[in-house]
Image (cartoon, rainbow, N blue to C red):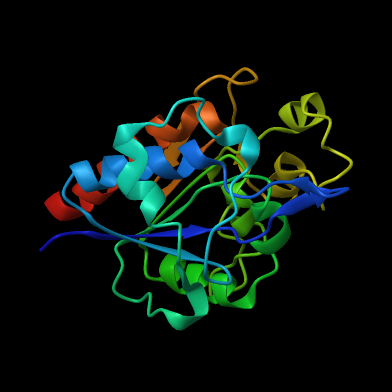
Length: 224
């Protein structure tokens, strides 16, 4: 049976003073293409449905043919709350600063991820996508990141972007506060980590390696 992956993306489009933000495109397209190439069924939903806002800084100078199918899925997405998520083998959460504003506080996303974690299924995320994980717990109330190796956009990288004062919280700091064993590479370097069924990547440069680790985790389950 083909594995099923659900990619959940942000719907938030502004970070400060009308500065546009949203989904960081590569963090979505590279995993999407990778999952499809590996024979997985991939569905895409967003927090509020409809067209997904893209961070303008993430748009490539020239159109990438291999991203076309992935991008077409962002034109008119279904709303997460309207979709049954129980039969997905993996959930993947791309980043972009938009996620910092709608991922941590959405009750539907929280419920979906908590059920997925309790079922011991694969959760992958990259850059600001792990903002979805900061409030997620197992049934016994333990944060799912507690004691786990986890990576995400670092506080240093946020300060270098000069956006540290414009996000609701610093992601690295919050993941550490929830008991995560935060690991990282140099700023803007490709760094991702897998701890069991939890896979996280540091930044846009880590999109591909994070996706590859999700594939590895799903294949491990298939071969178990």
